[in-house]
Image 1 (cartoon, rainbow, N blue to C red):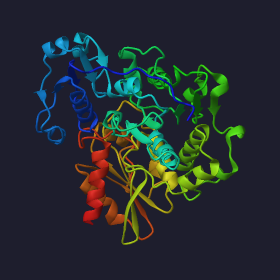
Image 2: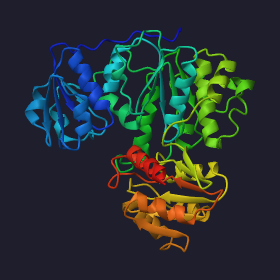
Image 3: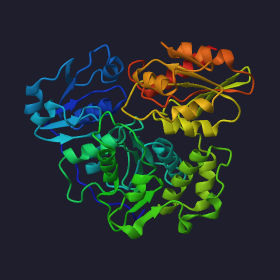
Image 4: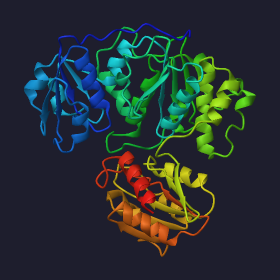
Length: 444
C-alpha cells in the first residue's frame, strides 16, 4: 500500500508514567498495560473508587502498577515523566497544569505506527462508518484493525500489527482536541484518509460554543499531506465550511467522480442515513485502492454496530430495536425514519446543553412516547406542553419504560430505544443503557 508514512517511536522504557483516568471502556486498561509492557513505571490514578472501577482493575491484575484511587495526588503528576490523559478528563482540569508532558493513547499510537491510518469523526454515524470501512478492508488486508472511540484503544493491538496493516480510528472531538496538548511530531498527525460524517449540535455541556466543537473536529485534516485524502460526507453548515489544506484531494459527497456503479443502491433495505454511512465507507475504501466490486460485496454483508439501530429481538411480533447511541434529537429523528409501522419510543435522559425543540416533531410521529427520568426530560416535557395521553413517565428505570411501551405495542409495531439525550445519572454510559435494554428485552 502506497499510503504508508514514517512515524516517530515512543520511548517509555524506564519512564515514570501516570495514567490519568482509568475509565471503564478499556482505554485506560490498554494504556496501563502497554506502558508496563514497554518498561515504564506506572501509576494509575482515578477520582472514582475501587468498587466503581472493579472490572478495569481486574483486567490489570498481576501487573506491577501503583494505584491512587478516589483522588489525584499532585506529586504523582508533577514527578511523572509522562502523564497519559484519558479523554474523559477535562482539559481544564487543574491537575493537568502540573504535568511535564501530556500524551494520550491515540498520540502514543500515532507516534509509533508506521502504516496507513484512516481516521473517522463526526457527530453521528462515525462508529458505523469506521466499522464498515474496517469490515471492507479486512477483505483485502486481513490484518486491518479498528480502534479509538469505539471502545478499543489502538494500544491494545499496537504490538501485533505490521507496517502494511491499515488501521481505522474512530476519533471523538475530545480525542482530536487532546492531540493539541501532546508534543507535536515533526509531521504533525496526518491521516491517509480523513472522513467527517457530519457536524450537528452536541457536547455543549463541554464546549463554550459550536465553533469550538467544530474546531476540534477540523483537526482531523489539519495536517493533511499532498498524498492524503479528506472525505466530507455532511452537508450541514459546518461541514460545508470546512476547508482542508489540499483542496484537490478533498471529496465532498455526493461527488460524480467517486460514484462507482456497483455502490449505487447499496443495501437498499437499510435506512437512508445507514446507506449514506455505508456509501461513505465505500468511497474511503475506493481511495485506498479496494476494487468497487469487492467493496459492494463486503458492505452487503456488513452486520452493523451494537447500540445503533440494533434489532434485539421480535417478541409477539413486536420488534425491539436498540438505538442507545442516539444521544441527540436529530439521531432520534433519523431512527424514526428507519422504522416501518407504528413506533413506541423510549427517550429522554440527562442534559448536554442541547436543544430539545424537535421533540415536538418526534412526539407527533410516534404511536406512544415513554420518557426516562433526567434533566433533559424535564425540558422535553416543557416543550411538549406537559405531555399527552400517548406519553408515559418520566420513568425511574429503563425496565419500567420498556414495560410501559410493551403494554401498548401491537403485532407489527416497534419498541425503539432512541433516547435523543445523554445517559449519565441512570446509566454509566450509552453502552450500559443499551446493554440493559437488551437484557430487559431478553427477559421478556
